[in-house]
Amino acid sequence: MEVIILEDSHAVATLSAQRISDLINKKPTAVLGLATGSTPIALYQKLISLYQQGTLSFRHVVTFNLDEYIGISPNNPQSYHAFMKRELFDSIDIQPHNSHLPTCERAGETSCQVGAAYEQAIAEAGGIDLQVLGIGSNGHIGFNEPSSSLVSRTRVKTLTQATVNDNNRLFEEGEFQPRLAMTMGIASILDSQQVILLATGAQKARAVCNAIEGPLSAMCPASALQLHKQVTFILDEAAASKLENHHYYRWVRRINESLEKN
Ligand code: F6R
Image (cartoon, rainbow, N blue to C red; front, side, top):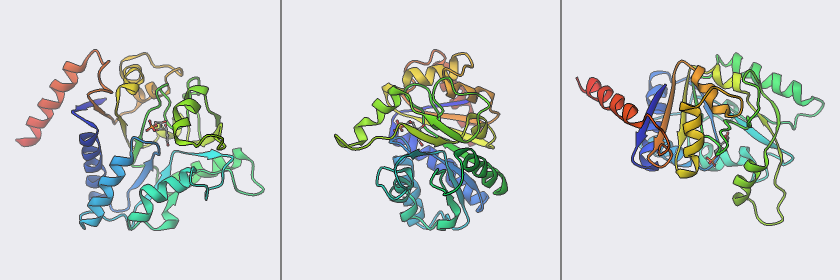
């Protein structure tokens, strides 16, 4: 695992945008796995700037989002469909038919069928080249809450009270807040060629430490990334503040940077 500790959330967004733009410039038909939430917003702003500067195009890029709420329509501003349009898709040249989010709204199909169809669509696109992840303060990735099976696939999950509380800040008082979501599974995430997990802020420090240095456990779903062959944690100082081995991660980074220069 590569663990990169940067001074602040701005640097986290800059480096992750760089990784994504390098991939797309090498492979214009790249398949990206995308996340919602507060953390990747700065990354999406950087990607929009690169597009506006003319150094990056999403014309042939395909995207699959991790998750979507159940119980609100894709047109609801609180939906992840709406979030992605607002924060990224409406400001870049991605073709609408190339961006995918899981949804349970398909008439006549059970959620199991919808989940299986989502997995199949990812496979038919050639699999995910690079998956962007955030992390919940309880260690969730996507909406794979603690106790999720490490071999899970796209399906409906019930959100924990901790996640509902964390996201409550985004809902008005009295507004309906979903308790269920359709999410890619942990095995779906592990199938991707490359993963970058972004974490910023002290409220993520415990989960980050459990994911990287804790035991592999369904109680910290992000710890399943220990099984992935190409995963990079891109952290700010606050999110990295509970890592015991932080001297080593910084040392590796310095060595890698000096190798890149030579
Ligand atoms: C969202 C997602 C979640 C978030 C996590 C962190 O698509 O998959 O796992 O990444 O809840 O959310 P923020 O970034 O809002 O702290």
